[in-house]
Image (cartoon, rainbow, N blue to C red; front, side):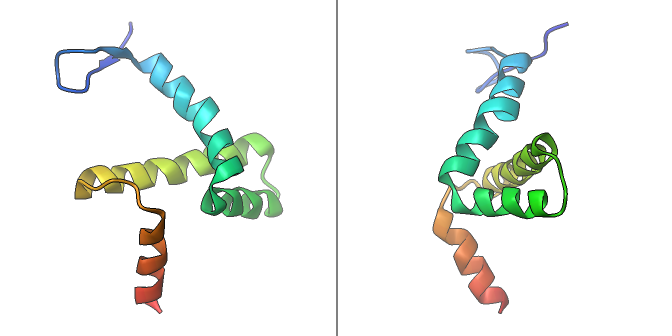
Amino acid sequence: MDVFLTSDGESNPVPFDRLKSAVSLGAPLVSVRYDAHSRHHYQRLRGRGHSHGRALRGVVDRLLTVLMAMLADQTTYDPARRQAVLAQAH
């Protein structure tokens, strides 16, 4: 059975499998290549002995955590926000 997600509850149905493929295949590879935080997270996981696939899943977990925070706060992605949060913590 296909599960459909919609942006507004009714229009533009997107099959869950397409969303899952985008998140599990494309996002971590692009993120590791172009985002310094994701690259560092991936390298740290690899350094701990995780396989390539497991490290990419770790990057996906991090990206989903960021996405959920953005949705909860109703904000857009801001790479400098993490630096500000880290600066306040020290």
